[in-house]
Length: 475
Image (cartoon, rainbow, N blue to C red; front, side, top):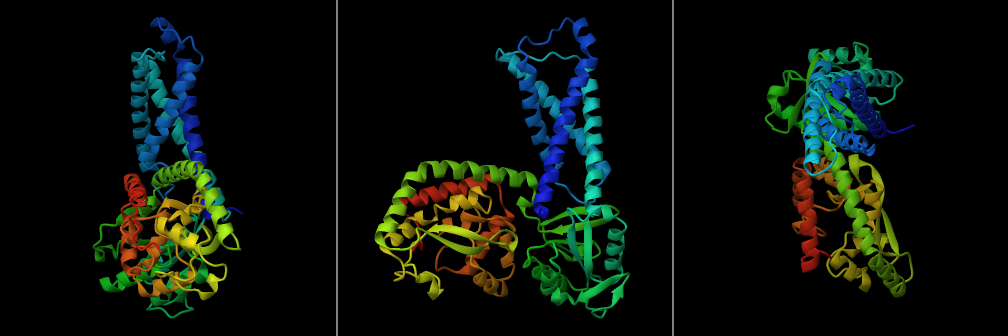
């Protein structure tokens, strides 16, 4: 069975295919219907049969960019059909304008243009809007069927068992096609174990971390009433530590004074998402993944000879494996095996402590690799297979993560993104035996202010630090 993220990606890909097919089909039909008007106006189709195909490919790329920029691939549960229709109409119109511009530009530079008339344009626009909306209607139907079969569903906890919480629960259970599977309530006013509107109370609000783990919840909806702002902030902080999505029923929204929010809805019921990370947007994730693949592939290609020499040096200096694999905590708190060149004696792991300056466990070759950060090169493989990113918070071992989450507020927020080979904290000298609180502050700034240019800036600073030897606290 596919994981929830895989289902989301598959359904999003299907929607992209539907949109591209709809737009191209609409264009072909419009030209077939308008063939007579073309000949009457004295136009001829291009002599090169590949010309329409080239423009079709360019148009499809333009459409994907425009549709994604309009939020049409965010796959929001309970999104309004009317809002979607308006976005589709806007996106199709803008796509047509841009394709016409590109077509004219091709003609200006000596290429063959695709002829058109106002009749064809109007028919094409009308058919494209109709085809996209029809395709998306069928896609919604398929998604609804899958969710009723418990595919692409999300486990939800509702914090608050009074009127607001009951309203949220009753709205959700009337809409099984949304794919929410509510596990129960958390409440400080209703006894644990009591059934409210057919749903059990699983614990108090301060039990939220334990209950999230026990139920494997993906999302928490906070629907408290008559509570102080500090109570609400405490619940949010606890839930954030478990790397779950957090939404608030607006009855409590006025208590929040934070600009890291976005308003969505549950069909009839408006909800507020708390602190959406920039990479919650699928378009941003796609851009970041593309950057990861390009950078990792290019660096691996050029670094391969260096990596072979490093492997030989490690083997000549000491017996033992060339690579060091260690379980680290990555995206959404999930473990993965991080790959590095071995820089310590083979028995070093039994001491189980952080590396410090002049650590006797580090080999001579290892000291050079750590000082230059060349020991991190094998993590490009982690990047290529999607476990890590080029830029992101550096991953820690599970035991340290468990300790830090107890000591540092919002520490688990840094796990909302993939772990990185380099990061904002690292290029600012916060690596090795440095303040974890300060590192976390830099990591959270990166997570909540991500942009493609920010990633490129960090990559360039990493390269500059490597060339100039300014690798602070690298030992």
